Structures are given as C-alpha cells and as structure tokens.
Amino acid sequence: MPEPAEPRRSRATRRRAAGAVLCAPVGLLVAFLPTGSVAADDAVAPFGEPVTRCEITDPRLPELSGLASAGEAMLAMNDGGDRAEVFVLDGACAVGEVRTAEVDPYDPEDLALAADGTIWLADIGDNAQSRETVALIGLRPDGTTLLSRLTYPDGPHDAEALLLAPDGTPYLVTKEVLGASSVYRPDAPLADGATVPMSKVAGLGLTLTGTPGGPVGRAGQLLVTGGAVSADGSRIALRTYTDAYVWPLSGSDVVGALAGPPVRVPLPEAPQGEAIAFAANDRDLLVAGEGLPGAVTLVPAAGDLAAPPPATATEAAAGSLATAGGVAPLTAGIVAAVVATVLVWIGGKIRRRPA
Image (cartoon, rainbow, N blue to C red; front, side):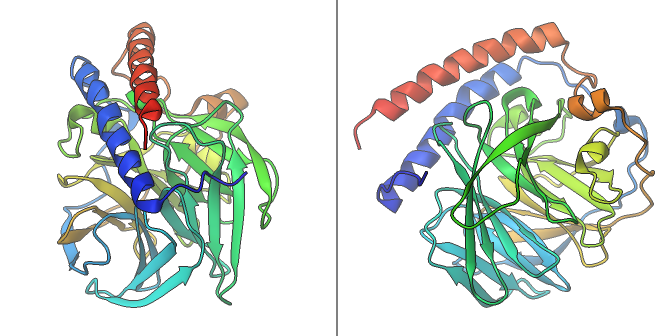
C-alpha cells in the first residue's frame, strides 16, 4: 500500500519534529542506566586509529545517512528528499555522477550496492512508528527502477540499517530504545510493485558503552543507525551513533553471524553519525554522518576477525548481544515499559496535531 501522499516539506518537517520529541524521554531515562559492555569488549579490537579520508562540502549532501563503497568511489545518499537520489563520490569526497529515479521516498535511511550493480535504497525510517509499509528501491545499472514494499509481522518499527547479504537477501535492523533491536528478512523475493511480508529472524541487545557522540546523549550508544556488508562477503557491520560492531560472515548466513560475538569499535565523536561502509579492501571501515562540512572517517583494520562459531537455532534467534552485560532483564523491562508508555502518549499527541 502506498504511503500517504502529503506534501514533502510538511512530511519531512513532521518526521524530524517527531523524532526530536520522541528521543527526549529516551535520553532522560537512559541517563539513569548503568554502563555495560558486550562480550567482545574484553578483547583488543583489531582496528587502528581513525583518520579523516576526506570532507564532504557539497551543499547537495547536508544530511548524509547512507554510504557504500563502489571500488575506490563511494555512494552516498541523504536522509530525505522528494526523489530517489544517489551521489557518486571520488576519493576526495567530490560529487561526480548523480543517479536518480522519479520515486518519491518517505524516509530513506541506508543504501547498499548489490553484486549485479543495483543500488538499493532502504526507505525504512519511521520515527512516529505509523507506516503500514516500508520499501526497498532498486536503481539498476540500465536505468530502470524496482520498488518493493515490505510489512513487519508485529507492527511498525523505525529502522535505519540495511544489510544486503552476498546472495542478495536484504535484512532490516530496527532502531529501538534500550538497544533491543530486531532483524527482519523478507519471506519471498522482492518484486516490482509487490508488497512482501517479513519475518523476525534475530534479535540484538546493545548495551551502553560510554563512547561519546550523537544527538541524544547516552541513548545514542544503543540506537542502530546504519549497516554494511563487505563486497567480498567476509564481514558485516552495524553502527550506532557512537560505536561500530563488526562480525565475520560465512557465505550469506547473516543470522548465524549475528549470533556470534562482535568486535566493538569506538568511533570518533560526531554530532549525528549514521552511515557506515567497508572500504575497497573489504576490511577498513568508512563512517560519516549529517552536517556540512562532514568528514568521511576511515578506521583501518589492524588484524583478522575470528571465524564465526557455529550457532544453534536458539542462539541465532536471540542474537549474540541479547544477554550481554549492562542492564538486568527485569530493569530493562521496567524501563522499556515506561519508555513505551511515554512514547505512545507523545506520538499520539503529535499525530493528532493538524497539518
């Protein structure tokens, strides 16, 4: 089902206002939670000191939300806009080609480059958690476009991360309070004009890390804002406003990979870091975010990741971070209930306001 056709400027304004208001109580409540660590924190992260690769200054990219490597070039997209639009950046962050399609997305948040050259835009943002469908928009190399809508099995979710497995299967990772993110996968192949149901296939439980950054204080350490899969299929990564998490990948078993312990990589402090990609060598990380001038930061790999351990079905469903240290399940449940109550009340007030 298509999303409501309201004016783009009004829609974007409402979306950002809702997001800002909804994050406020989350940040307040998270401030009272203890700082924890994930299982992999005790190991030395096999990544070196971050360096600035280049700076984005082009006024057409003020709200960079998605990033992907295309050889030595990079693909970048804004959070928002009234048509599907991807900017091709060179090694100095200068914009060359611009790929567009006359598709008006609702809230694009991430992108990925498929093996066949198709660029997938994840139109999956939903701060107010009111969308009946989300969408994946494919920009094919021949200039044609594919638009496939997706539905969650358990109601709307806000999401900002797309993981595109080497076999072409997309996985959406939600952006949830207290880091209780879920991973969803379509139940059938994507098809132009079709609406495909999804199933929840994994869950993650991020904990507070103490890394500074982001627009919402400590809450930003729990909110997943981007994802990436290396071109050679050997690694996957998710990021929050403050940290990156990297897993070794075998084949296209994304669920199995997420069941293993990740390497956590603290990222340089940034006002709103939302994008992550693997560099051309399939090992180094590239991260960026909103704002101009905006740095694209390279985090060099300094060692190998451990091979992913075999996972049981139960472990795969629960996710490797689901019971990691930090917040006790009872405490998390109580706080989550309070957060949910506040968010539902505020969200209802926002949605009832006249245009």
